[in-house]
Amino acid sequence: MAAFSLKINGTSQQVDVDPSTPMLWVLRDHLQMVGTKYGCGIAQCGACTIHLGDNAVRSCQLPVSSVGDQEITTIEGLSENGDHPVQEAWLEVDVPQCGYCQAGQIMTASALLKRNPNPSDVEIENAMNGNICRCGTYTRIKKAVKMAANSTQTS
Image 1 (cartoon, rainbow, N blue to C red):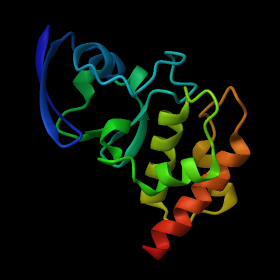
Image 2: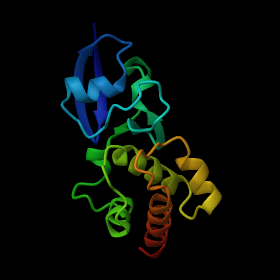
Image 3: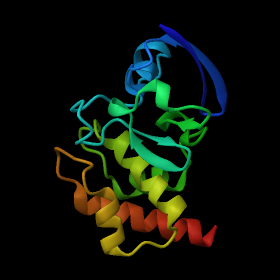
């Protein structure tokens, strides 16, 4: 075991875990932050997506030892009141069905818009590719990303 000091959602957190422990399990099992979901465990579905700095990463394959001093943002820390433009667009477009993949989808979309506030359809599709939605709401996801992009440009 080793002690790690992590900055998660703007707050310092201390954990004592094996250095190879994936961030997904640090968040869920050690810090009781369960918004980040376990999907496949092999970084293929996107349900476990978090931000490491400004980048969307799959937390199921991110060892705690590789985080260093980079800030982590989870779905719980994306906005205090659920009013991030992506979250608002998700509700407006009625994206979620079962909801299981939505935290990962939202985290991927918000990282895209931070990096590229006016993405084309192809850029949205490329960024969101690999975030699997078992309910097949891909058309609504793309519509919500475009809506969020438009709202961030007019804010």
